[in-house]
Amino acid sequence: MIHLLREEYGTFNLAKLENGSSTTDVLLFQVTHMKMELSLVVQAFAIAACVCCAVSYCHCCSPLLLICVRCRIVPKTEKSQLIWLFTSMLLMYSFFFAWRANLDISKPLFKGVVERFWMQSNAVIVVLAGFGFSLLFFLGEIFLGNSRMIYSLEWLLAAVLVTAQIYSNYSVCDQSNNNVVDQFAMNLLSSMPPDAIILLRGDLPGNSLRYMHHCEGIRPDISLVDQEMMTYHWYLPKLAKHLPGVTFPGNRWNPVEVPLPDGTITFNLHHFLKVNKHKDTFVCIGLHEGDPTWKKDYSLWPWGSCDKLVSSKVPFDPEMWVERTQNLYNWTEEYGRFDSSSWELVANEEMWQARMKTAFFLFDLAETGSTSVEEKAKLYTLAYKRLYYI
Image 1: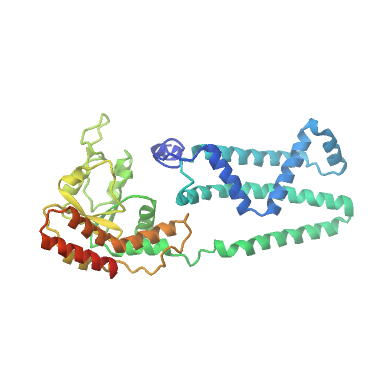
Image 2: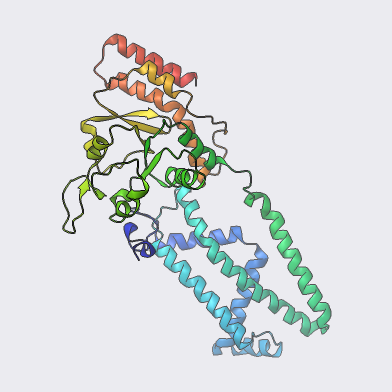
């Protein structure tokens, strides 16, 4: 029931702690999206079906109803009920989703996420268009009278419309050669040392790495732990047994270590790192902001798109670290070639930013660290070389 109601996100919310666009904005955007995704023919047929069905129930439209009855284009009772059913489904789904879709559609990625939920409503419109299409041939039977010819023409026109839709959209929808997210996950997993722990954050690294690891069997020596889910009461009691290489000092991640009334033992990130100090621990991508306890004894060193949590007692050797991290990934995708609302764009940008991450880390270290003039000069030089000779 918790998962069904999406209680961790706020009941039925699409995202957690997001201030999204208004219901009106989402509905208007859905209408605009329908105009772009569906052909004018489909839209016209769907509207015709709804209008004709409405006429059959509306006494104030009696002149139009009389015409429809005489022309025999008012749908039968069963068909009218189906049209009303699908129309009601469309309206209920659209209004409810617009109400609970708490994402800011002015951001391209969130816009793309919201658009994917409109495939269901578009499918309903296509069904309504089918009813409207049948009404067209009721008219044809009235004026032409040759039912066999009309029947053949109906099938021919239906085949033409479907073929035209496939022809105009196939190249856009064909993703058979799209392996960008796959390569993103493969690069991250292959860059990790043996028996490492990866603390995952976000949909892109979380879902892609888990798929490659659990479903494709890539890097079975690595342990993947979701940062957000560690804060849920059900996650560790159910899944900790599937992570035998990781020690959990409690049942739930919480910045404040206190026993809860139900007997749950909480732990913070500092405690987690302490009991797993025998393993290399990485974060992909970023750390949960709610728990700063790790800063007391640990530092984040750049590791491509990820970061490595290292004890503050370990001295940082910039030359060694640059050499160790400069060839982590094999990434050949051109920058900026993907649609702004796609996860492929996010993956590509993460990989390109990874090339500059170490350089900026060295630059910040030179700017903020209490090091000698010679050390600062070395850090600036390494940062420059890493940035302009990548």
